[in-house]
Image (cartoon, rainbow, N blue to C red; front, top):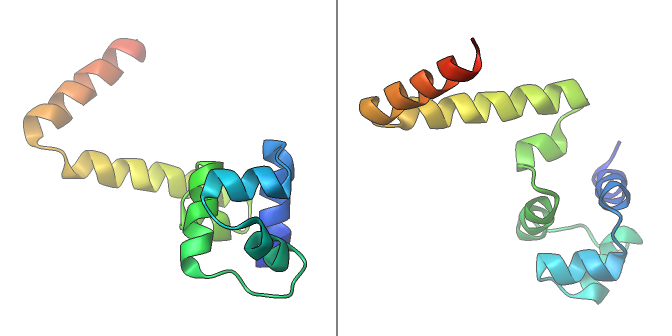
Length: 101
């Protein structure tokens, strides 16, 4: 699946028109239409803005499967937890323990 196919897949899953997606991403409708119609390639900034609308990271955008995307989300969460100060990390672990019993 190429970049445009992936954008279209995510747009359709979100139930958005091209105009709605452009507006939410803060990019011009004409610019997005050119990307969707394969007349221009999206810039990295455009892809980041689109990913923001879809609620995914660039890594998830380029993931080859839903399982890979899920794994990437968990890896990102784990990295965020590892960066927490020890007292916050310990509190989070205690919180998780309450729900896992």
